[in-house]
Image 1 (tube, helix red, strand yellow):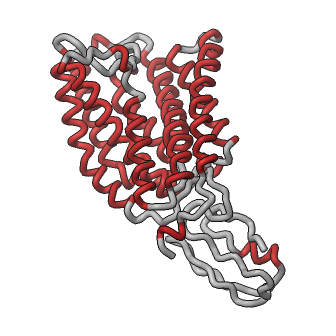
Image 2 (tube, one colour):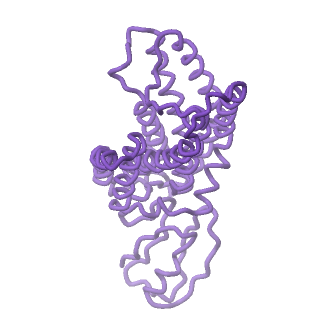
Image 3 (cartoon, helix red, strand yellow):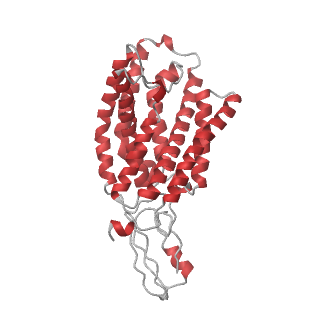
Length: 344
Protein backbone atom coordinates (compact mmCIF):
# COMPACT_ATOMS: atom_id res chain seq x y z
CA UNK A 1 0.00 0.00 0.00
CA UNK A 2 1.69 3.23 -1.14
CA UNK A 3 1.32 6.71 0.33
CA UNK A 4 -1.09 7.83 -2.38
CA UNK A 5 -3.51 5.04 -1.46
CA UNK A 6 -3.20 5.89 2.24
CA UNK A 7 -4.02 9.55 1.55
CA UNK A 8 -7.39 8.94 -0.11
CA UNK A 9 -10.53 10.83 0.83
CA UNK A 10 -11.99 11.84 3.21
CA UNK A 11 -9.23 14.40 3.58
CA UNK A 12 -9.91 15.59 7.12
CA UNK A 13 -10.29 19.26 6.18
CA UNK A 14 -13.41 19.68 8.30
CA UNK A 15 -11.68 18.14 11.30
CA UNK A 16 -8.69 20.43 10.84
CA UNK A 17 -10.87 23.54 10.69
CA UNK A 18 -12.85 22.38 13.70
CA UNK A 19 -9.65 21.81 15.71
CA UNK A 20 -8.28 25.24 14.73
CA UNK A 21 -11.57 26.84 15.77
CA UNK A 22 -11.33 24.97 19.07
CA UNK A 23 -7.83 26.42 19.55
CA UNK A 24 -9.22 29.94 19.24
CA UNK A 25 -12.04 29.07 21.65
CA UNK A 26 -9.46 27.69 24.09
CA UNK A 27 -7.71 31.08 24.21
CA UNK A 28 -11.05 32.78 24.81
CA UNK A 29 -11.83 30.28 27.56
CA UNK A 30 -8.43 30.98 29.10
CA UNK A 31 -9.30 34.68 29.36
CA UNK A 32 -12.79 34.11 30.78
CA UNK A 33 -11.76 31.51 33.35
CA UNK A 34 -8.53 33.35 34.09
CA UNK A 35 -10.35 36.51 35.15
CA UNK A 36 -12.76 34.40 37.22
CA UNK A 37 -9.94 32.61 39.07
CA UNK A 38 -8.05 35.87 39.53
CA UNK A 39 -11.12 37.44 41.15
CA UNK A 40 -11.18 34.49 43.54
CA UNK A 41 -7.70 35.44 44.75
CA UNK A 42 -5.38 33.20 42.70
CA UNK A 43 -2.02 34.46 41.53
CA UNK A 44 -2.47 36.12 38.13
CA UNK A 45 -0.17 33.77 36.19
CA UNK A 46 -1.62 30.68 37.84
CA UNK A 47 -5.20 31.92 37.35
CA UNK A 48 -4.88 32.35 33.58
CA UNK A 49 -2.77 29.24 33.05
CA UNK A 50 -5.23 27.13 35.02
CA UNK A 51 -8.08 28.62 32.99
CA UNK A 52 -6.29 27.77 29.76
CA UNK A 53 -5.56 24.22 30.94
CA UNK A 54 -9.20 23.58 31.82
CA UNK A 55 -10.64 25.06 28.63
CA UNK A 56 -8.17 23.25 26.36
CA UNK A 57 -8.69 19.87 28.07
CA UNK A 58 -12.47 20.23 27.70
CA UNK A 59 -12.14 21.07 24.00
CA UNK A 60 -9.74 18.19 23.31
CA UNK A 61 -12.27 15.81 24.86
CA UNK A 62 -15.14 17.42 22.94
CA UNK A 63 -13.35 16.72 19.65
CA UNK A 64 -12.86 13.07 20.54
CA UNK A 65 -9.26 13.25 21.74
CA UNK A 66 -9.71 11.71 25.19
CA UNK A 67 -7.27 8.98 24.21
CA UNK A 68 -4.55 11.63 23.89
CA UNK A 69 -4.99 12.58 27.55
CA UNK A 70 -4.88 9.05 28.93
CA UNK A 71 -1.56 8.34 30.71
CA UNK A 72 0.17 5.32 29.20
CA UNK A 73 3.57 3.81 29.81
CA UNK A 74 4.46 4.41 26.18
CA UNK A 75 3.34 8.04 26.32
CA UNK A 76 5.02 8.77 29.65
CA UNK A 77 8.31 7.10 28.83
CA UNK A 78 8.65 7.95 25.14
CA UNK A 79 9.31 11.68 25.52
CA UNK A 80 11.82 11.14 28.33
CA UNK A 81 13.78 8.67 26.21
CA UNK A 82 13.71 11.01 23.24
CA UNK A 83 14.21 14.37 24.95
CA UNK A 84 16.27 13.62 28.08
CA UNK A 85 19.04 15.90 26.82
CA UNK A 86 16.64 18.86 26.92
CA UNK A 87 16.15 18.23 30.65
CA UNK A 88 19.92 18.05 31.11
CA UNK A 89 20.30 21.47 29.50
CA UNK A 90 17.56 22.93 31.70
CA UNK A 91 18.99 21.32 34.83
CA UNK A 92 22.39 22.81 34.02
CA UNK A 93 20.89 26.27 33.61
CA UNK A 94 18.95 25.88 36.84
CA UNK A 95 22.09 24.60 38.54
CA UNK A 96 23.99 27.72 37.52
CA UNK A 97 21.29 29.87 39.12
CA UNK A 98 21.37 27.69 42.24
CA UNK A 99 25.15 28.04 42.49
CA UNK A 100 24.87 31.83 42.31
CA UNK A 101 22.13 31.77 44.93
CA UNK A 102 24.22 29.68 47.34
CA UNK A 103 26.96 32.30 47.19
CA UNK A 104 24.53 34.75 48.78
CA UNK A 105 21.55 32.99 50.32
CA UNK A 106 20.43 36.16 52.08
CA UNK A 107 18.12 36.79 49.13
CA UNK A 108 15.96 33.79 50.08
CA UNK A 109 12.30 34.79 50.05
CA UNK A 110 10.54 34.43 53.43
CA UNK A 111 7.69 32.73 51.55
CA UNK A 112 9.87 30.38 49.53
CA UNK A 113 7.94 27.23 50.49
CA UNK A 114 4.67 28.71 49.23
CA UNK A 115 6.46 30.10 46.18
CA UNK A 116 7.89 26.68 45.26
CA UNK A 117 4.49 25.00 45.71
CA UNK A 118 2.82 27.68 43.59
CA UNK A 119 5.54 27.32 40.95
CA UNK A 120 5.12 23.53 40.81
CA UNK A 121 1.37 23.89 40.23
CA UNK A 122 1.96 26.65 37.68
CA UNK A 123 4.45 24.55 35.70
CA UNK A 124 2.10 21.57 35.69
CA UNK A 125 -0.70 23.78 34.36
CA UNK A 126 1.65 25.24 31.74
CA UNK A 127 2.50 21.72 30.54
CA UNK A 128 -1.15 20.69 30.31
CA UNK A 129 -2.32 23.95 28.70
CA UNK A 130 0.39 24.29 26.06
CA UNK A 131 0.44 20.61 25.13
CA UNK A 132 -3.34 20.53 24.76
CA UNK A 133 -3.35 23.72 22.71
CA UNK A 134 -0.33 23.24 20.48
CA UNK A 135 0.24 19.48 20.36
CA UNK A 136 -3.36 18.27 20.66
CA UNK A 137 -5.56 20.92 19.03
CA UNK A 138 -3.14 22.58 16.60
CA UNK A 139 -0.95 19.61 15.66
CA UNK A 140 -3.88 17.19 15.84
CA UNK A 141 -5.92 19.37 13.52
CA UNK A 142 -3.09 19.64 11.02
CA UNK A 143 -2.54 15.88 11.21
CA UNK A 144 -6.17 15.23 10.31
CA UNK A 145 -5.62 17.02 7.00
CA UNK A 146 -1.93 16.44 6.28
CA UNK A 147 -1.09 13.19 8.05
CA UNK A 148 -1.75 10.91 5.10
CA UNK A 149 1.64 11.59 3.53
CA UNK A 150 5.15 11.80 4.94
CA UNK A 151 5.71 15.34 3.70
CA UNK A 152 2.40 16.50 5.11
CA UNK A 153 3.20 15.03 8.51
CA UNK A 154 6.53 16.86 8.55
CA UNK A 155 4.78 20.11 7.62
CA UNK A 156 2.26 19.60 10.44
CA UNK A 157 5.02 19.11 13.03
CA UNK A 158 7.14 22.01 11.76
CA UNK A 159 4.24 24.45 11.40
CA UNK A 160 2.80 23.69 14.84
CA UNK A 161 6.28 24.07 16.36
CA UNK A 162 6.87 27.38 14.57
CA UNK A 163 3.56 28.77 15.82
CA UNK A 164 4.43 27.49 19.30
CA UNK A 165 7.63 29.52 19.14
CA UNK A 166 5.81 32.60 17.85
CA UNK A 167 3.35 32.38 20.76
CA UNK A 168 6.23 33.19 23.13
CA UNK A 169 6.89 36.58 21.53
CA UNK A 170 4.89 39.78 22.02
CA UNK A 171 5.46 41.12 18.52
CA UNK A 172 4.07 44.56 19.34
CA UNK A 173 6.62 45.06 22.13
CA UNK A 174 9.67 44.27 19.99
CA UNK A 175 11.61 47.17 18.49
CA UNK A 176 12.22 45.49 15.14
CA UNK A 177 14.56 48.26 14.05
CA UNK A 178 16.94 47.30 16.86
CA UNK A 179 19.17 44.41 15.70
CA UNK A 180 19.59 43.10 19.23
CA UNK A 181 15.87 43.00 19.96
CA UNK A 182 14.89 41.56 16.59
CA UNK A 183 17.70 39.00 16.90
CA UNK A 184 16.42 37.96 20.34
CA UNK A 185 12.91 37.54 18.98
CA UNK A 186 14.06 35.38 16.06
CA UNK A 187 16.32 33.22 18.22
CA UNK A 188 13.65 32.81 20.90
CA UNK A 189 11.24 31.55 18.24
CA UNK A 190 13.96 29.18 16.99
CA UNK A 191 14.81 27.95 20.49
CA UNK A 192 11.19 27.38 21.52
CA UNK A 193 10.28 26.03 18.09
CA UNK A 194 13.01 23.37 18.12
CA UNK A 195 11.92 22.38 21.61
CA UNK A 196 8.32 22.16 20.41
CA UNK A 197 9.35 20.03 17.43
CA UNK A 198 10.78 17.36 19.73
CA UNK A 199 7.56 17.32 21.74
CA UNK A 200 5.50 17.21 18.54
CA UNK A 201 7.34 14.14 17.27
CA UNK A 202 6.89 12.38 20.62
CA UNK A 203 3.15 13.10 20.60
CA UNK A 204 2.77 11.95 16.98
CA UNK A 205 4.77 8.80 17.59
CA UNK A 206 3.27 7.82 20.97
CA UNK A 207 -0.27 9.14 20.36
CA UNK A 208 -0.37 10.71 23.84
CA UNK A 209 0.27 14.14 25.36
CA UNK A 210 0.38 12.97 28.97
CA UNK A 211 4.14 12.42 28.97
CA UNK A 212 4.80 15.59 26.99
CA UNK A 213 2.76 17.66 29.46
CA UNK A 214 4.68 16.26 32.45
CA UNK A 215 8.01 16.66 30.64
CA UNK A 216 7.16 20.24 29.67
CA UNK A 217 6.16 21.18 33.21
CA UNK A 218 9.28 19.60 34.73
CA UNK A 219 11.51 21.37 32.24
CA UNK A 220 10.00 24.77 33.09
CA UNK A 221 10.28 24.04 36.82
CA UNK A 222 14.00 23.27 36.55
CA UNK A 223 14.63 26.61 34.86
CA UNK A 224 12.43 28.75 37.14
CA UNK A 225 13.03 27.03 40.51
CA UNK A 226 15.60 29.49 41.85
CA UNK A 227 14.36 32.80 40.45
CA UNK A 228 10.63 32.28 40.87
CA UNK A 229 10.70 29.80 43.75
CA UNK A 230 13.54 30.52 46.13
CA UNK A 231 13.92 34.23 45.36
CA UNK A 232 10.24 34.89 44.79
CA UNK A 233 10.71 36.95 41.64
CA UNK A 234 7.60 37.60 39.56
CA UNK A 235 7.19 35.28 36.58
CA UNK A 236 7.42 37.22 33.32
CA UNK A 237 6.51 36.34 29.75
CA UNK A 238 8.69 39.04 28.21
CA UNK A 239 11.50 37.17 26.50
CA UNK A 240 13.09 40.13 24.72
CA UNK A 241 15.48 42.31 26.75
CA UNK A 242 16.75 45.79 26.16
CA UNK A 243 19.77 47.71 27.42
CA UNK A 244 22.78 45.90 28.83
CA UNK A 245 20.98 42.52 28.99
CA UNK A 246 20.17 42.42 25.29
CA UNK A 247 23.49 41.05 24.05
CA UNK A 248 23.63 38.42 26.80
CA UNK A 249 20.06 37.27 26.08
CA UNK A 250 20.82 37.06 22.36
CA UNK A 251 23.86 34.88 23.05
CA UNK A 252 21.90 32.74 25.52
CA UNK A 253 19.09 31.93 23.04
CA UNK A 254 21.60 31.08 20.34
CA UNK A 255 23.58 28.78 22.64
CA UNK A 256 20.51 26.91 23.89
CA UNK A 257 19.23 26.45 20.32
CA UNK A 258 22.56 24.90 19.32
CA UNK A 259 22.46 22.60 22.35
CA UNK A 260 18.99 21.42 21.29
CA UNK A 261 20.05 20.44 17.77
CA UNK A 262 21.19 16.84 18.51
CA UNK A 263 17.77 16.05 19.95
CA UNK A 264 16.04 17.74 17.01
CA UNK A 265 18.06 15.56 14.61
CA UNK A 266 17.08 12.43 16.54
CA UNK A 267 13.42 13.52 16.56
CA UNK A 268 13.52 14.07 12.79
CA UNK A 269 14.81 10.52 12.32
CA UNK A 270 12.04 9.19 14.55
CA UNK A 271 9.48 11.09 12.49
CA UNK A 272 10.78 9.44 9.32
CA UNK A 273 9.75 6.04 10.71
CA UNK A 274 6.24 6.88 11.98
CA UNK A 275 3.66 4.66 10.30
CA UNK A 276 1.33 6.20 7.71
CA UNK A 277 -1.36 7.35 7.60
CA UNK A 278 -0.88 9.31 10.82
CA UNK A 279 -4.10 11.31 11.04
CA UNK A 280 -4.22 11.86 14.79
CA UNK A 281 -6.98 11.28 17.30
CA UNK A 282 -9.44 13.75 15.77
CA UNK A 283 -9.66 11.88 12.48
CA UNK A 284 -12.51 9.38 12.33
CA UNK A 285 -13.30 8.43 8.76
CA UNK A 286 -13.26 4.66 8.36
CA UNK A 287 -9.55 4.19 9.00
CA UNK A 288 -7.46 3.71 12.07
CA UNK A 289 -5.95 7.04 13.20
CA UNK A 290 -2.34 5.88 12.85
CA UNK A 291 -0.96 3.14 10.64
CA UNK A 292 -2.72 0.97 8.03
CA UNK A 293 -6.22 -0.10 9.02
CA UNK A 294 -7.29 -3.73 9.07
CA UNK A 295 -8.98 -4.66 5.78
CA UNK A 296 -12.77 -4.55 5.65
CA UNK A 297 -14.35 -7.89 4.66
CA UNK A 298 -15.77 -7.70 1.10
CA UNK A 299 -19.54 -7.79 0.63
CA UNK A 300 -20.83 -11.30 1.11
CA UNK A 301 -17.59 -12.72 2.44
CA UNK A 302 -18.08 -15.63 4.84
CA UNK A 303 -17.23 -14.37 8.31
CA UNK A 304 -15.93 -17.82 9.17
CA UNK A 305 -13.06 -17.47 6.68
CA UNK A 306 -9.57 -16.36 7.62
CA UNK A 307 -9.34 -12.58 7.38
CA UNK A 308 -5.97 -11.06 6.43
CA UNK A 309 -4.94 -8.06 8.51
CA UNK A 310 -2.01 -5.69 8.86
CA UNK A 311 -0.06 -5.43 12.08
CA UNK A 312 1.05 -2.04 13.34
CA UNK A 313 4.51 -1.54 14.85
CA UNK A 314 4.85 -3.42 18.17
CA UNK A 315 1.54 -5.32 17.79
CA UNK A 316 1.57 -9.04 18.53
CA UNK A 317 -0.05 -11.37 16.00
CA UNK A 318 -3.61 -12.42 16.90
CA UNK A 319 -5.13 -15.61 15.58
CA UNK A 320 -8.29 -15.17 13.55
CA UNK A 321 -11.28 -17.38 14.24
CA UNK A 322 -14.82 -17.89 13.04
CA UNK A 323 -17.69 -16.09 14.70
CA UNK A 324 -20.22 -13.38 14.24
CA UNK A 325 -19.46 -9.81 13.19
CA UNK A 326 -19.33 -8.43 16.74
CA UNK A 327 -16.71 -11.02 17.75
CA UNK A 328 -14.70 -10.27 14.60
CA UNK A 329 -14.71 -6.57 15.49
CA UNK A 330 -13.53 -7.31 19.06
CA UNK A 331 -10.62 -9.39 17.71
CA UNK A 332 -9.21 -6.39 15.88
CA UNK A 333 -8.46 -4.40 19.07
CA UNK A 334 -4.75 -4.37 19.83
CA UNK A 335 -2.29 -2.26 21.80
CA UNK A 336 -5.10 -0.14 23.29
CA UNK A 337 -5.47 1.65 19.95
CA UNK A 338 -8.81 2.88 18.63
CA UNK A 339 -10.20 0.91 15.69
CA UNK A 340 -13.23 2.01 13.74
CA UNK A 341 -16.18 -0.33 13.39
CA UNK A 342 -16.21 -2.88 10.59
CA UNK A 343 -18.51 -1.81 7.78
CA UNK A 344 -20.20 -4.25 5.45
